[in-house]
Length: 255
Image (cartoon, rainbow, N blue to C red; front, side, top):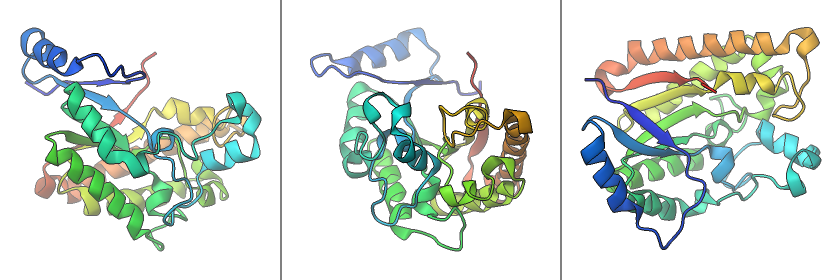
């Protein structure tokens, strides 16, 4: 039987509630043994450290800094949950609750400040190595998302997802990720919710905040997102799956 996954967004933790035993009991008695409980985050939403240790600017950094009014009280992800500095505490919380899988995304601009593999930020790469090692040391399976809506700003400056050349950049970035982390990661998500990425090219309320509907921006975006997923899926199947033993797939919004 194929493994089934449930990714839960955990919004509030109450320190006086012991969830670990409840989840373990629920998994064992009411779900198949292949079923795995997990939680999910996205880099921009939790990491913070938006310009530390060589990280480059991404489209959400640019949007909320230039248009702070789009978010209530002008808040942004500059610090967020500060997971960049507190990832060990986060992993400890994940373990305490009883989750078996932690899905997180790599910040493309943290490991490639310009979006291109010509400039690799080794401190960014090491951060994700440390996070993965911490998860595995606590018997938590890492599930890694390559793209969760935070395109490096230099790539947006040349058209972002509306420019077909973005597919080449994404493939090179994915190749670096597979080489750097693939021996310890068995589940890869190429792109999280393409529909939401499209919103950024049809609305001013999501990054990059371009209302280009009249020019077909969201349709060009959709086309290139699917091309990017296909290219990276084939890259993994051809060059990495036999040696690393993992899987790659895309996440679609279902609501």
